[in-house]
Length: 270
Image (tube, rainbow, N blue to C red):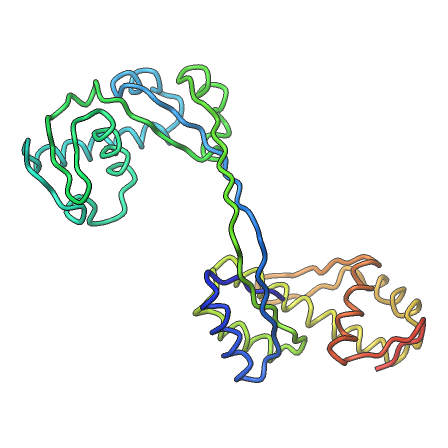
């Protein structure tokens, strides 16, 4: 199973900690990419309010949040007053970030290290740019494009990703690896690794058990395919493990590399 971490430092630290606890592993770096699609809506705030009315709560709520952010910001910021970034962004607030960007672009706010309010605009006349993940608008895309002149923007980012692969099939070692990895890996990666780890452990145990009876690779694979899918049932959950002949061939190679089985031609033994 493979665990994704956020940095090279985390990859090295996790690998060392796993090795210290007797969990075989190897590190991997690879070029990857992230692809995101957005709908971008641009216009004067007042016009956006009118034209977007009733399309979707996603847009309505965003505009409401910008209205609230504007009222709060303008009530606490005097013209010609300079404000620190920390004062304006005490927490992550997308509506406030959108608003500040619009104020800077409109010439109402200027500065680099500090921001100065040059004039107070009428919110209705302020040019606003909104960006929504396309998944959030998937049911109203045509309406958004037609009524709001939205444009599709695609962002492609090339990134280096870091992984630690666990080279174990014993359930206890896999559990230990997952416990250690909690401090290092992303939540999504940990959940995926947990299911993959369980699946590999169960499949490996079945292979080792059947390999004691089957002396040829062909017979072993046929016997495994008869058991597919393998079911694991808990109190409130069930996992079904599916595989094909090609996947079994690759899995047998993994087990051979780890020293659990030996394969020579069509012969196989534990």
